[in-house]
Image (cartoon, rainbow, N blue to C red):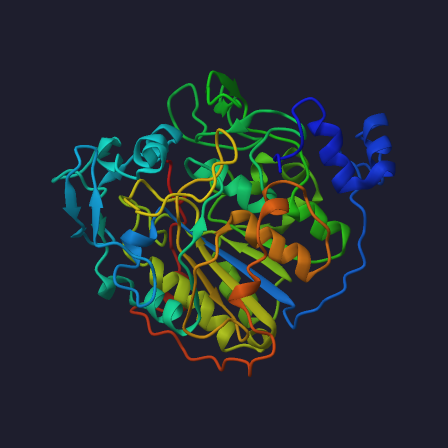
Length: 451
């Protein structure tokens, strides 16, 4: 199925799916005054018909790792020990610490080099800066990410999770809230890279400095169009609003390329912006105070991310802190936690995306951990998932309908759950750093990365 229909009628087809014919007519007549003044038109309210015991969904987004890099040796998972390079050589993956300071390009062009028409042998050709290149063919010693292994082995690990986009963090976070990076409904363009300012700095959002632009990719794969990174189209957040489902989006600051709602005009300049919670560590106090929203997105800061060159290695402890707070609270009994990495970060991975839908979708494989009383225990999912699968799970769990973007074609992660099983009891995830460290006075909450 085409992403939103043909290019000629994609606008109308997509809006029909989302709003229905009455909503389409209203939207075409006046976007500004339809159903209460939202610029994108009023979303239909759907009466939820929950069929699962899940009443809270938490989406923790980590950064820039592939399964072959971060989950080396995970039992039952499809993880490689070696990889091919562009010269036909077989390279043994080498251990490199989580906090190692180096740079790997993960632009759309880097994807194309590594992917190499499905041969997955061009990762040595990516731009990279490290003492002993190629530093793309490396793995993190399991002892440094032990909390991740505990979670993956106790609950469900997805070894066929693919980022939807073929590029870096800015578009990836648009897909994680909306299933697309297109600037408006029906556009044949997709945001493909991270925005930059005229001074060369990386920033994003509707309040970015004048002159900020992001490269857009067209159906032929060309990135000749530049656009200000402020878009206007429906998101999963709008569907939650329309159905009175509460949400919060925890982020380290407002204009990071990771703060997805900042690049959607009606979210940035509307009442919803107050639900973007800064800094991200407030999620820990919200959990303990009983103020967790029904749906939460949680973004780390630079140090607690897994981004090479930014992380101090505390990312696994950060994730464990959130999970432990939920696991030891009243929320555990009805919560599903999805831990996902936004992009592959340039690291080698041996599994090609199962489908290439257009010039920018699908992208590389990324790790996925599903934690819940109803997640299958010690299970490795070999089912093809993508970022839209998380959106679809939320949509189905609360009876929201469909956005009609990547969520429409995605699976719903149902193989990761067994709602008839005896609910998993929570066991604390051991980690070297606890919540008090992340809540310490004077902590600097910098953006996760600038690439």
